[in-house]
Length: 88
Image 1 (cartoon, rainbow, N blue to C red):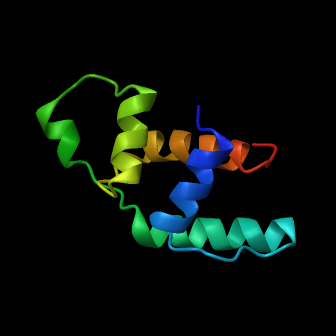
Image 2: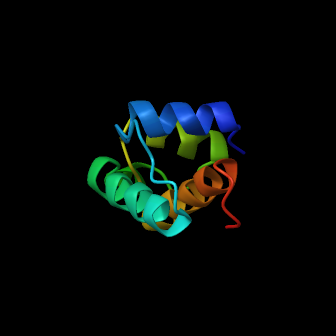
């Protein structure tokens, strides 16, 4: 699970969002747009391994902008939203 500090760092450093909207819907739209633009879906990792990645591996790939499969990126985004106070 991400801490609030890790989530804030991810938002600033990876998503390059330095000012989030105050309204939850607008903030969610900002986060989703930046996440889709800066953390790619990619399936090349699936060609080299068949193991389900751990949450630590998913976090590493998201923070490094390596991306990953849709289900792993969705798990990370859910953890990010929860750490930022959303009921996800």
